[in-house]
View 1 (cartoon, helix red, strand yellow):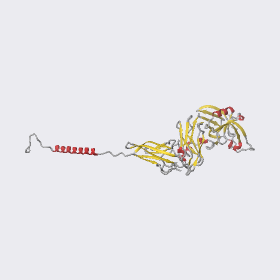
View 2 (spheres, one colour):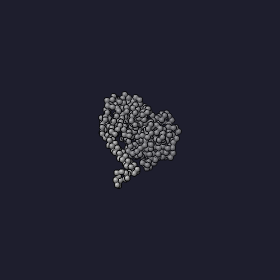
View 3 (cartoon, one colour):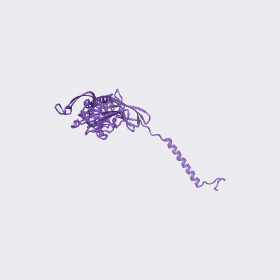
View 4 (cartoon, helix red, strand yellow):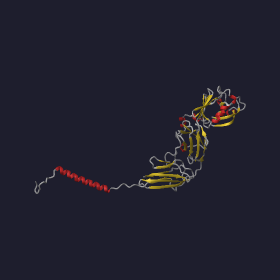
Length: 419
């Protein structure tokens, strides 16, 4: 026992010493951590930054100039673009940081763009811009060729638009054609020329579908120098499904309404000999009807003096092509109907059957003709169903489409589509 040692006192063991030192060091480290923790501060939360293009006070911009709102360190609560009388639809990017108008802006109009955002700090702020679009020197008008507003149509009915001048920027046009339907429909636009574009579904319209076309063409840049003159709209309804199958071989046609057989009729088709006197095979659509039509062979190249010249007054006439083909009453050939083909290309019916067919026909009803060697051309009347779906898409720039507007924000150059 060391000097001065008292009873009961023992020296530290080496193990105990090490543990004691370790405990003191741990306590010191813990204290240090507590001190450091107490002295730290969270990173500051920044205000939202909003950028609007064009800015207020900018000179008048082109109708197709880039218009967008961008937010950093925040998110949009609301964005509105108005021209004083209406609000314009817009899109927001997937990450929620960019908003842009869905459709082109009209020329020569004032707009106010307002964005309300919530910053990362939770504060709400508002940014806005007031600007004006330029007037344009050249515009191109658009006409809806068919169907008519408010019409009840058949299941084969196309939608046909015609531009007053050739269109170069066809992608932008297709994106601007918004189609709303009461049931889902897959369809596409097909350019038959630089001025004519037609929409049809992949298969016949479902019966009783309600359709509305909103063509947002005002301000769309159609060529390098010309813009769309105006927006146009169209609403129509699809009626019962009327599908007629007419056979040149068994000399009868059967009409089905909504899939059910409604009537079977004896008929007589084109007698042939000349191509003009051969009824065309394929999917026709009923284009128009008239109680009385004068049919003159001069229209198919056989004027007075021609051996086969004719001029007839016909009744209950339903036109199915542009090459002179009708379904009509032909009391003079009743004996031939159901047994042989004697017409100059039309489908001859007995008076009672012709009256029934006339009364039940809607524009755009389907008449499928079979059994002849002459094929209906897709551009003959409304022979659009003669094209297969891949063939139809070959002249469409967006494939299937119901009107998409600008899918991405306009780029800084203001070009929304390739030329």
